[in-house]
Amino acid sequence: MKFDKHGVLEITKMNYDSARPKAKNPIKIQDVSLRDGHQSLFATRGRTEDMIPVAKMMDDIGFYSVEMWGGATFDVMHRFLNEDPWERIKTLKKYMTKTPFSMLLRGQNVVGYRNYADDVVEAFVQRACDNGIDIFRVFDALNDFRNFQTVVKVIKKNNKHFQGTICYSLTEPRMGGKTYNLNYYLEKAKQLEDLGADTICIKDMAGLIAPYDAYNLVKALKEQTDIPIHLHTHFTSGMGDLTLFKAIEAGVDIIDTCMAPYAYRTSHPAVEPLVISLLGTNRDSGLNVKKLAEIDKEMEKVIPKYKQFLDNTKNAIIDTNVILHQTPGGMLSNLVNQLRQMDALDKLDEVFEELPKVRKQLGQVPLVTPTSQIVGIQTVNNVLFDKDETYSNITEQVKDLCFGLYGKTTLPIDEKVRKKALKNYPRGQTPITTRPGDILKPELPKIKKEVKGLAKNIDDEILCALYPVTGKRFLNWKYGLEKVPNDVKAITLEDVQKEQELIKKALSGGLTTKKVKPANTRAFDVYVDGEYFNVEVADPNAKQREIVIKKKEEITTGNDTGNLLAPIPGMIIEYKKNVGDEVKAGDTVVVLEAMKMFNNLDASCDGVITNINHKAGDSVSKGSILCYIKSKK
Ligand code: MN
Image 1 (cartoon, rainbow, N blue to C red):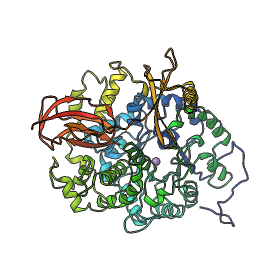
Image 2 (tube, helix red, strand yellow; image 1 turned 90 degrees about the vertical axis):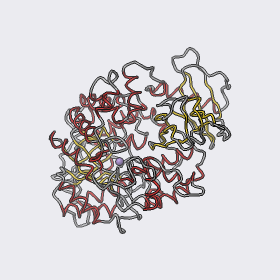
Image 3 (cartoon, rainbow, N blue to C red; image 1 turned 180 degrees about the vertical axis):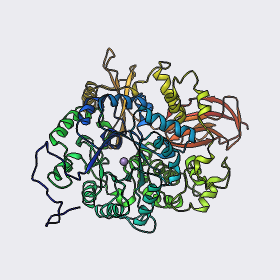
Image 4 (cartoon, rainbow, N blue to C red; image 1 turned 90 degrees about the horizontal axis):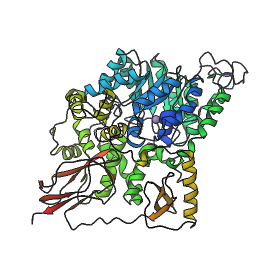
């Protein structure tokens, strides 16, 4: 790296033209607007139809690559958007023929929340290659690279790019301490080199990495290895741009940014100011600022469709809590949402206090999907449900973690917690020490049989292998076997405008409240002065426009009867029992998914199930009656 006499990047040529040659060693830029950008800001709700108008323009920019798949997109697309995830790759590829496509792959977790068997993992990566993914950013939430073995084999066989990734984690406000210090990262980078990584990525998912730590880390890595270094950070804490700049000075090869409309807040630094800052220096990207501005203009047009997902509760666009609590942005919004749904938002400070303790007890793991959810939800459970004993309500995922099913934790798990978690654990009480994939039996044959007739190809089957409940539900929509619900349908800009006008009118008292709920409504949540309203607007195609606003009623949680109530809002994964079945107190009756974690709900008394109110795939609110158990008294 060259610096001039003022200690800044050397100006090689005063050339501020929009169309100018790049430097000899330009900073390479991956755009992540179409994956992590909307995942960070808009709950991953970005639709393919809104990416198409900018796809060709982005392809012409000269990005090193575009990240446009993986992470949460696969889940959200088929669950909330009624979109086939595989189709997005093929569709965008038609418009983007020059720029390599990159995806975020959670190693043996693939794009799900647990480790899958090798046959599922192999099939998934093969189909991702076939459908058009070029670069695989592979990470493991525990930085246990044994979870890379299977995916790397397939990536290499297909001659694709394997980006080995280290999750950046901290226990202090800055890099260092006993666990996550410089040596930890250098050691991990060596392991990735041995695995044959084409590039090495430092993945700072929570925006924790401080500028001088990034500088020192990149410099040390560049001295240790010739493999190009890629830095991924978020703006969340407000340090993102500073961090990227110091990393560039330290010689980082590739960085991640977003187009301005998808940048900042919990997302990433924007590309435009960075390109301008480096104009004429020896790291000049050569990217054309005018062309970037044209893309921004086009992108802004669709943003109103997504604004409802933006967290606008505070004025600040940065969050200092991230540094204080090492809580990734996504995890924080999940915690807040869950507490709010349980009317326990006042417990947030307690959750923050408890979180480092739970994290330490569970092996001081990095906090990234899925460990961020695993630690986060367990912390919420401890705060809300522990009265006479600790860890009174342990999620299934925590039990799996304790058994070793996610891999090796950074530090050993607290023995008392592990013992309690593994009591009655079906796989046994002694944790494994092998690669988790080694003990998982093939999963594809069973799922293929299960979805025979419904799934039309291997991509359909893989979807169901990863997401059995929502995957099947999606295929039913896809093949016209079930009516597509309104809330997963795309909305138009006209819809958005009309909805906004109606809300404005309604809140100013300009509309009368009607008791009759019109057919075909679209529901959404509105918060006014801390009060929650559920607003339903009639389908724009309906003959008469009507609006219903109802204040959310307190749901009675009742305690008398044999009603089994949902203790938290969530989606039903399965009923373990049928109507007519006898149950004993403590038997698991329903498995409820909340914030991606599975909770076994047990019968509170001996009896017979006389009534079941829902089915797998149904979303239920807190206090919903799931079934009735007639007591045997
Ligand atoms: Mn990220």
